[in-house]
Image (cartoon, rainbow, N blue to C red; front, side, top):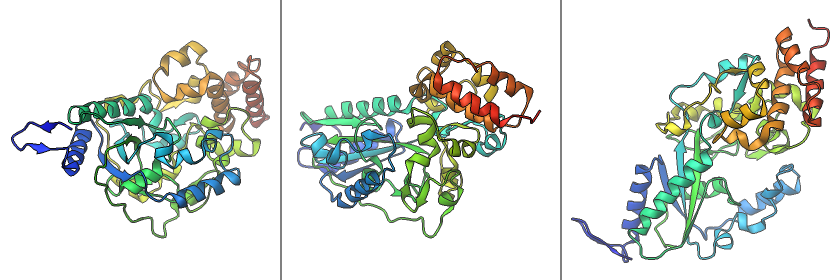
Length: 365
């Protein structure tokens, strides 16, 4: 390692504690609200056992990537040989100007989109910042190996964030922080430097079950247990085919993701507004009518959602999701007309959900 040439010169080859402190300072300068370090060789037996049980019960649904990598998902050194530490970061995402979520959810003619997806794709934002952090470390360390992630590889990010002391795993399975609730993104850097590690935190969920009680589809089947096959985020984003009919009425107007379990969490009264402009609302997606979105053609979908995480699901799933929202909305001629306009859509999937939606409005006008 190089010697840092400052007024208080530190030989980083002998002082990894100083390097860790510098890395954390750089991380905050780059826009991460917190940054912590975990031992990559920490005991993961409990996490592995829970993951195996979860997959054996089929709770992963069609997310085969959640199980196909085996122990690489929980053991960093198997994914990136030589890894000694996992640096976990969080970045707040609530934009400063955004329509109140409950008001949108209560207006069935409007489209509710999970608040993390209103701006730029977080995968790109976090990975770019993590790369800048790695570049800064390079100025202090002659040689080191690393790999950065943001929900982009088989990494149990909540588990590693928990081990690093970034927060604790809530009963809804998301990471919680006493300073920021759960409305933030996570990112990781696997690194082969023996940095000092941070202590994990205790859980502060107590006896609270609000997240379990509020779930529209009862996907949270118990504390820390999620059946993804019933989760609206899974159904509207991960599931590629037909959404089960019995779950369609429960989806309401949620066309991309679901925030209910976070909206009722007491810890989110501490959530912090982001100053990251990339996460600002684009194209009024925080409060827009279902009919308006359903009228978008392929070109509009591609152009308006360029750089947005929603574009990842594709136009067909987008229309499928909105059709369900229209089926759950109060009957009106505007909705009936919008649905009839897509009765002959080229997609079997879209036509199926449009027909279902029209059936919900039969004899109601």
